[in-house]
Every structure is written in C-alpha cells, then in structure tokens.
Length: 330
Image (cartoon, rainbow, N blue to C red):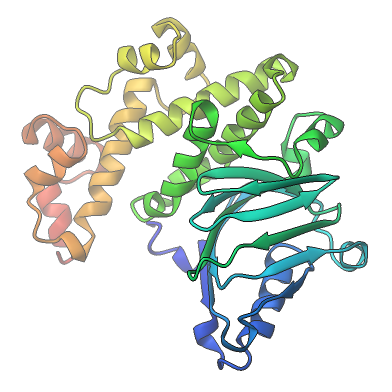
C-alpha cells in the first residue's frame, strides 16, 4: 500500500472554504483549539477570515501546515484547564513575521525562524498584517518523546531558534519537504518518518541548550542515525551516494556508519537501494508522470544503468518494471 492509498488515514486537509464566509472565523477558532489546544483568537479580518490546514499524522508525532489571515491568539490558564494535550510544539515561520510570548520571553520571529512553546503554560502570539496570509509549520512533540530535562527545555520557550545552519537547517528542510516526500513513500517508510522528525528535533533543541552530552548515548546514536536517514532520503537521486560519501558528510568513519546500521533491517547500501526502488515503484504507479520512460525513472532515483535497475527491481518485487507498470494499468 502506498502513501496515496492511505492518505485519508494519514493526512487531513481542511479550510474555511468548507463553511460560509460569515462562519469562517468561528470555525477556524474551533479547528485550531482542537488541533493545537484551546485558544482565544481575535482578528481584524474576522468578517472575511481565510484559513487552511493540512496535518500529517505519523507515529510519535504530527506535522501540520497552517495558512491564515493575520490574527492574534492567546492561551490563558482557563484554556489550559479546559484542554491540555500535554506536549510541546516546535514551529517554523514562513513569510510574515510574528510575535510570541511565553514564560516572560517575548520575541519577534521572521521567516525561517523556529520557536518552541509548551501547551501547559500560558502564551500569546501576534501574526503581523502584511496584506498576505500568515504561514507556519508545526511539529507536535509529546513531552515523553524528548529525553531532555523539562527545566532546561523551559529556557527555550518563547525564544527565537534560528534554523539557517547546522541541526536547525536540517530540521527545517526536513519539515518543509516532509509533505512532498510522503507522496512518494510506501507505507512501511512512513513508519520511519515520525521517529526521524522527533530525533532531529531533539538534536536541534539540545544544540540550542549547548549541551549535547546531556543526551543519553543511545539517544545520540539514534539522533545521528536519524540525520543519516534524512540525508539518504534527500540524496537518493545522486548516483554517487555511497557509504563513504555519507560517512564523510557526517564526519564519522565508514566503520561507525556500518555499526549504526547493525540493528536496522538493511545495511547502508541495502537501505539506499531499497529506498530508490520504493521511490521508483511509486513513480511507476503515478498517472501524472506516466509519460516518463522506465529508463528516466531509473536515472531520476540514482540508478546509473537501466539494466541494473531492472535486475534489482525484479529481485525485490518478482517482476520487471515494465511488467509491473502494465499490472497497475499505466
């Protein structure tokens, strides 16, 4: 089963287009309260409010994208008592700036900045009106998923977390491309995506605390493995993607790289090959690119030679790529 076949279970998209213009603002307030936590929202655009949201539900986490008319939102103690999912949200700002206040921290966030807030503490945010929709991406982080001391995490609440370099850039890029990536994934791949997102977020937050050593050794290894898995996913099209190039990029030895994969279903090379095959098979079932030849599909996902691709495909799926395409009616 592909991601497209389980999309109704994994991905939910809603917008104010489903209700009348008069009811749009009230509907949006209720939707945000259900998706994130009870809040009180005000907006100068309440009589013509527009908003859309897409949530991708993954094991361990949820990634949501929101676009909406400029507004202000406040989560007061009464809202927390009414509804508290008991988690953190790490979010990435796109486009218009926004102000955020939590735990006596008050900061202005611009495009590509990230920030963290706690649903169990009061907060206020203001999305500036720049005559366009505001846009944010939210990553839900259950409190139990972060192996970091809560009192130390509290230091980050409501502060600006730059995401242009290092772990922040990797996490921001991963979140931005996650929705597009799932359209090409098999269902078993989706099981990995949530864990990778949480591990990348853990590394990012630990780096902002200047205390990576506070992470347990197992968590550090899992976080490194998550970074490597994400790097593999984002570079499958490169025919020169090998264990050696992966090790060099992550400043580790090839031996350590292979050790990290000892508990994984596949070796490093096997992981690269399997994910290329999964992406290729998904493309062969995609009617939007039915015009693309099998050779072009092979090259797109890093196979140097069509004959090599055909042999690997037959070994993995029991039939040639051309026979598979015929069985799905493409």
